[in-house]
Structure formats: C-alpha cells, structure tokens
Amino acid sequence: MSSIGIVTPQAYRFDAPLLLQSGASIADYTLMVETYGSLNADKSNAVLVCHALNASHHVAGYYAEDPKNVGWWDNMVGPGKPLDTDKFFVIGVNNLGSCFGSTGPMHTNPTTGKPYGADFPVVTVEDWVRAQARLADVMGIQQFAAVMGGSLGGMQALAWSMLYPDRLRHCVVIASTPKLSAQNIAFNDVARQAILTDPDFHGGDFYAHNVVPRRGLRVARMIGHITYLSNDDMAEKFGRELKSGEYQFGFGVDFEIESYLRYQGDKFSDYFDANTYLLITKALDYFDPAQAHGGSLKAALANTKAEFLLASFTTDWRFSPERSREIVQALVDNRRKVTYAEIDAPHGHDAFLLDDPRYLNLVAAYYNRIYKSISGEQA
Image (cartoon, rainbow, N blue to C red; front, side, top):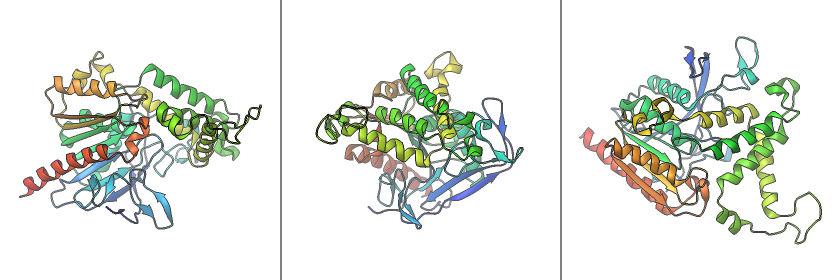
C-alpha cells in the first residue's frame, strides 16, 4: 500500500442560495474539494467521504508545499487501502461553516463587506448533505457507490440515505449515532461556554480586533479530547506519570496527561476557528432524524434504499456501540441489508481513525464487494 501522493484541492463556487433548515439561506458560497482516483465511464465508482468535527476535505495524500500535512484518513484511502483509489473515485468535501477553505465565519459576507463572524447562519447535518448533493450535481454524479463517514461524518452518511435514497447504493457509518445523548450535548455546551466567555471572543467578531479566543479554544479542545479517548487508552499512555517525577505543589503541569491535553489545546487554537467550533458542535446537537417521526428511528429510515455497513468500537463511550445497534435494529425492522461489526479496540472514539487491522479489513472486504458489483454492472 502506498500514499495517494501529492494532491491539490479545488474550489467549487455556488451562486444560487442554499435554503437552510433554520429558515436562513446562504448564497455565493464556496466548497473546497479534493478527489482521488479516476471516475469510470458510467460514473458508478464515486464514493463521498464526509468529515468529522475538526477534519476537512483533505482526506488522503499530502500537499507539495507541506509534505507533513497528510490527509486525516490516509490509512483508509489510497492505492491498495481499504477504500482503494485504484478502484474508486473518492471525493472529500469541506463543509459550509468550516475553516479550511469552504465559506465560513471568517470569510467575507458579501452583503456587509466584513467577515461573517457571529452572523454566519447556524447549519445542520442536513444542510451539509444538501450542499454536498449540489456538488454531486455539478460533478455529474447522480448516484454514489457509497457515502461514508466516521463520527459526525457518519451522521452525514446516514442523512444521505434518508434525504437522497436513490443517490447512494451503500451507506457506511463508522463510530456514529442517530442522535447525541444528554451527556454528549452537555460536553458540547461546556466547550462552547469556554469559547463564548473568553474575553477575546468579542461576541464572535474577534477578527475585527485582530485577536483569537485561544483560552476558550484550548479548553474546548481539552474537553473534547478527553471524550475521544478511553480510560484504558489514557491509562496505558499516561497513567499517573509525573512530568518532573515529583509533585510541584502548585497549579501548573504535574501529570503527563495534563501536559498532553495542554499541548493538544495549544495546537488546536493555532489552526481552528472559534466560530466554526460553535457551529459544528451545534450541528452535532441538532441531529435527530427520528424527532420528525415521533421519536421513531424505524420510521425515519423507512424510505432508505441503500445497503449499510456499520461499525462501532467497544471502548467508545462517546458514541457507544448501543447507539450503532439502535440504527442496525431500525434498519433490520425496515428489512434493509445491514452488515454490522462491533470491534473490541482499546482506543475509544478515536479508534475509527487508527490502524486496527480487524476494522480496516472489514472496510476493505465491504468495498471489495461493492467493486465486484460495479464490475458486474459494467460487464
């Protein structure tokens, strides 16, 4: 297996307004996109990869000007990898409201000539999916071989199966959930409060003040990062190891885990936008397709037509296996074809990004089956 190599993002501009779930709309927006592999003659081998909270369109490969900037799912996507770019045409798209090139709060609002800031409309998972469907239209792709995502990306894949049932043949949902638990919403709100109460936030218009609400972003990332790891993983990596070998009897860094979390927080505050963090965590909170169906997930998934692969990880307490099993049960109740794997991995929620061979082999086998069906259709 090898890297996809040097990749180049592309910008797709959309003039027509996109009506959002909130009732607001956004026009004259841009989506940043990367593609890998080649689209076949009948355009039947396209796979859309949806990203999670702090990721982007940069799914695989690296940039010529920055070889260390490797795609966030590079172990999953590339030649000979589970999502094999010698067989599939893979599309990564950066969602609206993000801070990696697609139109978001830091970009200029054409009606004011100033950055959107706090005026950028709240977006939902369904809004992102509708924007992705417009992108597919422009690319001439009427039906995806698969739509795939992990975590928040898995929510988008699930939404695709409900909003556009005829436009995907397979739906791949990794370490995800049909809705956030009260505990998850609580974690997100604490993280948002850290940003909102940072004096440098300035009500979301910190760009005009040439500052960044770094303290809030650091704390938000530290809170989030704790939830991505399992207790066992933390214990194995850090335990109660002391940074200097002895207690300092102060409120600085005593333990290795404290040092690690502060490092992650500092790094995050250097590249992520505070308004984007608020928007994306709200999108997570709002996702609940069963709500419009009296709380019935079976009813929400009744119109789906895709085949499904779902995978969860035993130590993922943020998006636990129980949540994936809820989706599986609802799909089975609707007589959908479902493959489900619950993988015993020690890494917590972040396991979907790591190199567990059972997980990667599962995905590879599923995509091999998809490719055989495509080859059969073309024969």
